[in-house]
Image 1: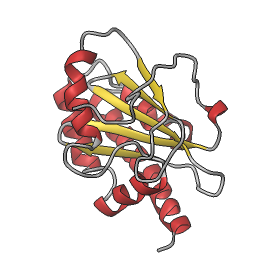
Image 2: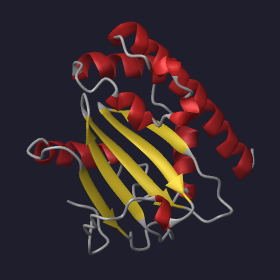
Image 3: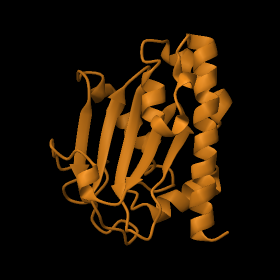
Image 4: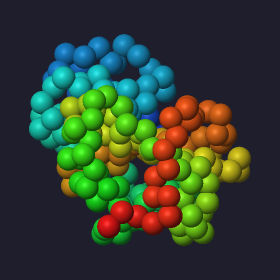
Amino acid sequence: MNKTEMFNTIDREAYILKNKIMQAFDRTFGTNLSAKDADDLSFVDILMAVNNQSAEAVYALLKRIAGHGVSFKQKDFLYEHTNMLFLNECGYDFEDLMEKLAPELDKVEGLVRMDGVPVDIKGNQGPFQIICHKGPFWILEYVGIVPKDVPVVEALFVQNGQVMVLRTEHQKKEIPWEQIINLYPKGGLPS
């Protein structure tokens, strides 16, 4: 499968997965998400619709419907082709960061945004943004800028009690960059 086909497959599966989650949330939590088109909602929008529900109940239902969100092969592909800051290996994956950040994030009210430029991580350089949303549990949204020849994509990662939404854009202006904080200013991951 070439790069374009892989992106198209991930995009199609994300659309199907959004619909499944929306229907399950409607049935279980009484939301009205299915009244909207899945293309008009991000995974973050869907998860935030149940932000007043039990974290355990939402995560259990999400895990049952989504599994890991993407396959291991798709995850490797996305980490390689989206200027991803994280690595798909123990100690450097998104859930490792969230396990370390969650206690600190619990002390913060509302939204936390961290922007930066990764320094030569797997040969990729480019702006990114991390937004931590406090929903039923902390949701990490990673937004990266990809070259014009790389299709934009949105994907859901569910792993070890942590959830991340990966979203890519082509231009920096498509992301609200107003609250800039340097994340990993020396280009390294936190120890």
